[in-house]
Amino acid sequence: MLTKSTLTRPLEEESETVPLKRVKTCSVPTSMQRYLQLGLPMDKALVKSYTFFAPLPSSSESGETADGFVLGVDEAGRGPVLGPMVYATCFCRESYYSTLTQMGFADSKQLNETQREELFDRLQTEQTHVGWSIRCISPQDISHCMLRRTKYSLNALAHDATIQLIRDVLEKGIRVTKVFIDTVGPPQSYQKKLQELFPGIDIVVAKKADSLYPIVSAASICAKVTRDAHLNHWVFAEPGMQKMLSMAYGSGYPSDPNTTKWLRESVDLVFGYPGIIRFSWSTCTKLLEDRAAKVVWPDDEEKPKAKSKYFSKPTDTPRSKFLNRNKSLILASSL
Image (tube, rainbow, N blue to C red; front, top):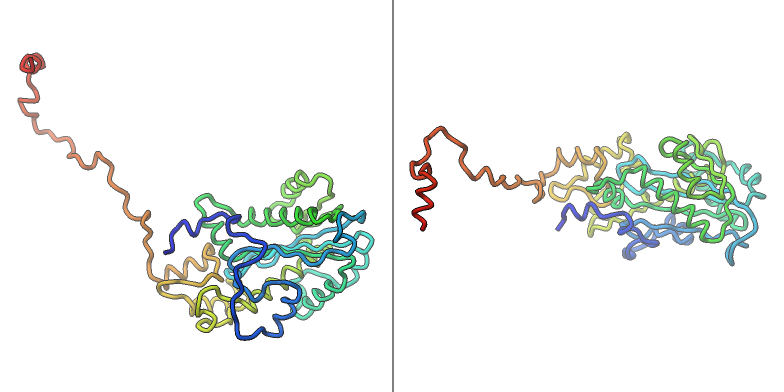
């Protein structure tokens, strides 16, 4: 039974390094195989958030390396009403950074799908010098966080994902010397926050960092390609949904006509939407109010009346003579 408590669990209770159990399918599409070979769980239902690391640069696998690394962080899927939000890091040796800047990395939104996938594949051939990782936050986890009684905002979620990714890279033995991050919120306060957490690292937080720093552009491509792959090969956790619902939901952004069309046509009167949806988005909330049955939660019902409401209000009727007797007479009668 769905209750409000199931919609307000903390993110840490929902997070894993791997998603839920594998969902059986008849065949694996060729386009999915390339991601499975990398180790990305595209054939599983994305219910719980997960973290993924590509193979580390060669000399870093056995422990900390003396090489300094430049690291970039960016995201994909912050605004859509459906699908995951993916934060990614890309890190490369300082001595190799000038080579990486000549590979054509740019803001993923300025590249078409083919260009992004080609650059993503190029990263897999540079594993001696370059590594990357992602934090894939499931739509259900996003809903849980933002619908908690104690609000956990999308900005806080983004900050925590970034901090976790940087810490994970450091724990892998990568000696990060510089970090470039596309800002979430005011860049000055965000940079100060990160600098206090990582005092030994030179950190730059900037607007449009994915257009300014190639290492951030590379992270942007890792995030975008991973999110798109999840959407293109989405595995519904709900039994039967794979055959019942269309996959023509577009980019997931509320401004996308394909997305709004899918949302209007896919809402169920009783069950609403499957777990691909972020229920905390106003786009979803309004459609559920307009097109689904009204739900009344037990604690939304009228609260019990205060005790005073069970007693009649004072009136001008004179009190009984018995109640107005002389106190001394009452005391005497009790002896």
